[in-house]
Every structure is written in structure tokens, then in C-alpha cells.
Length: 225
Image (cartoon, rainbow, N blue to C red; front, top):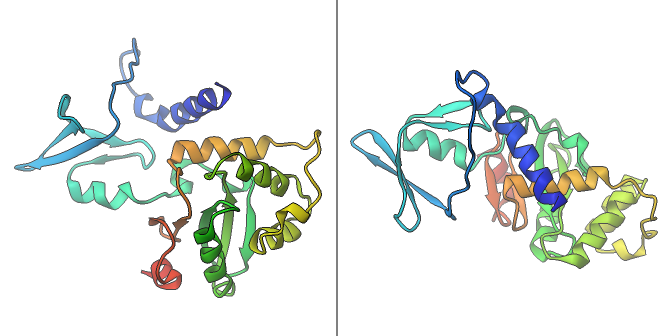
């Protein structure tokens, strides 16, 4: 319940500017029974249709994360698979993260400590540490065991050792998290990942915000595309 409430709060804060200049108050908010939505471009006019075709919307589409109107499918395609944390007001340094590399270009990796493809991405990233600084965000995509391992990482004061343990799959050799460990940054990480739809790993965010779900065939090429 707490996670759902925090997720709703964060989503509301991100979307607040949509209504900031609205002349009328918001009377009701209702969640439609929709899992996904299709966008149809018909003669230059956008229609939004629920996956089962029951609901069809016509009108303006505003991207609250990027604070911009979407006028056509091309605009939507350019933003739908991008995450620009600065425009969204998300500060990664407020999350439970680790840092890999020291290069001038910034990229982000969402990983699970028990995910073999994530370790593949981390291995690829180690070859690019002179060109990139990777913000590594451990998330428990694979369940409770991953959640416990992530908490150990979050509670390890020496982040260099935490990163080494993650990369070498030796988190169980780190001191176990104490009961008085401050997990506020980790809890914020969980909520942020939920809001962003990080429900599978790895997820790679390039310097320009392009997002790839899964391990790129060539990490360097993806980041520089």
C-alpha cells in the first residue's frame, strides 16, 4: 500500500504542471480499465484507442514528463522510448545507486544482481569506463532474493566495494544490512523504477535519453548512435 501511495504521489508531482494553469478545478479522477493504448494517425489527426477497442479518444496529447504537446506519431516515437531525467525532475543522486567509470559522457544502467544479462551489460560497460560514467541502479526485478541483495548494496557504506561485489556476484560476502540502516534512498529507487515502468532488466539509458530494454548487441554503438 505504501509503495502504491508513493508511486501515485510521484506520478502526481510529475504531472502537476499539466494542470498548473487550468482555469477550473479538478473534480474527479477515475482510472479506466485499460492496459495499453494505441495511437492512430488518420489524415493528420490523432486518435487514441484502448487495446480492446472499447475506448477511443480524440484530442490533444500532452507528455507530462517532457512538458510538451504531441502533435504527430513521429513526435510520440521520439519521446516514448526516451528517459530524460533532468526534464522529468528526477535526481539520480537521490537514489540508491553505484558509479562505474569516470568518463565525461553519462549513461544509466538498471540492473538486477541475479540477472545474467545484466552482468553482461556490466561487463560491456567496464570496457567503456574512460569514455562514460555509468550510474548503476540496482532494482529487484527478479523477486525477494534480489530485494535482499539490493538492500545489502544500499547499506554498504563503501560503494566501491559494493560495486565490485555486484560485478563479481559476491554480494553475499558483504556485511549484511543492519536493522538501523537508512533505506530511504532505496525505497525511493523502488518507487521511481515502478513509475518509470522498469519491470524488466537490464535497461540501458544512453546520454541522449534513448532507452533499450535488454542487453545491446554492441553497447558502445548503442550509446553513440
